[in-house]
Length: 398
Ligand code: HGY
Ligand code: MN
Ligand code: MN
Image (cartoon, rainbow, N blue to C red; front, side, top):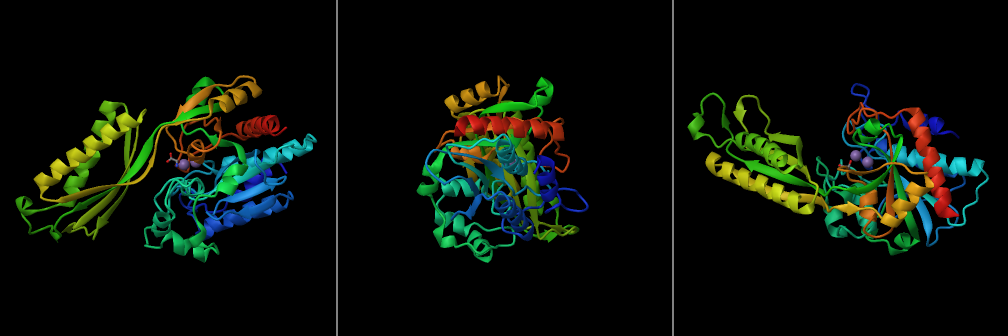
């Protein structure tokens, strides 16, 4: 089946009718439907499909064995994310297998398509949760206790999806099977548009992390409480957003606050608490640590002045990643010389890179927009991606 037919099957699942964005949160109905799609697609190709102990989906062409070639990405999305971030890599994996079979190729090394669970951390707050669990990069106890915004724990969500949360944790058997991991992903930026390059190869990922910010104050009446008598957490929060932007700009880093919760959220009341999440990224771990420290200090000082409480807690951190140079060079060569580029976007390949040879292929994104409904790649570029992936898988699996 061609890429387009597969793409059209997945496209409507979890898409919000008004915004056109995707809400495929791990183990919720929309994402479970994506899992069903993955299983059906694998079975239709006689690929042995399994859900591993950490909720990651695997489809095997050939016996799962050490030295296998693995490709894939993720099916979950950020709130109102685009159609391509994640699914493009999974659909392209199946389409590349179709193409190799049409060419009469029989792999000497098994090939697998994987869909990692909770890559966006969109429900439980930790990015790349499925690949971190696979690689033993997060403790099973901490993972089980992670909660979604309504207080449901990962353990409860897994159990209701028919998985046993007691089994989560590093999976040495599975890791030993991965000879190399190559993730195809839509570019989240427009470097390839500027280079007029439909395909590029990743070199590395900026260090990045996310921190939970809690501002506490004193709830009170908006109409009768003098300004000097207030302990308003919204004020401290607002200054933190401005400080984050300034500290990041001065350091050549990135800082974003895209998620905030105000309690009790009344129009005519000074809030009691504001919760917010900082996403910060930088060219190096040192710069990132410095920027985050400066933001924390500026917020603590402002809280002092406002008479409010301020607590900052790291929720997830991904150190700088360099993809496997030998694998990356080989992929560039096999593709006849394509541009290479770094990225500020995190990926499961970034987690795997610490454990097995990992690399990334990027497909051009004409506008660079991502984590938004407007995210888009042309079908021609997606087809070029499938071709490139098939060429790479053939080279690695023969
Ligand atoms: O946040 C990221 O960089 C990725 O999309 N999880
Ligand atoms: Mn993403
Ligand atoms: Mn992604």
